[in-house]
Length: 159
Length: 80
Image (tube, each protein chain N blue to C red):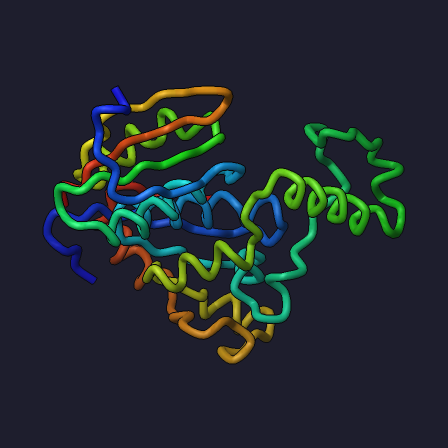
């Protein structure tokens, strides 16, 4: 898809399905929109959960293997049942307290602003995800479609 | 300074964090005419540099910015 004259373009890959990793592509894409750029996010592998209707409101924060967590939890504790739910609950409470936009809010801003939401066909086949499982407006495609779009991008990132 | 600027619309983005101030600014600036001025109020410390970049990227003019009591005020003229 060719770029409009004088318009800047951002092309992002969202490959992670945890709440913390959903934020960067959504924030960058929505900010690009605010600056009248055009953009696309290619949701692949676990990143596909970010545009999965039944999952996007329930993305989780892992309690394991994150030494940067504000409340450090030893991995042996983080591995216990319920710890992921607890880490997720804590993050959600911080998000609410700081008045940070939620993942569903940002997905909506991107969708309504015209960011292309590319769903990875291969991931869908691999994980048994159907088009109707993904939010309306998702464009299902493969890597070639994304690469063609990204080839004219001014900013490209893998997240 | 700010007193000299005639404000046509005010966007209260206080309490909002990145990326919401610029997202709301985009919507607000499209609601004023070319040459009119949008005043943005924000408490996000990142907004100071962000509105400079945002104005450059959108082709609008950041006329001035100031801070008082933790509230940042930006005056942006719609040029595009």
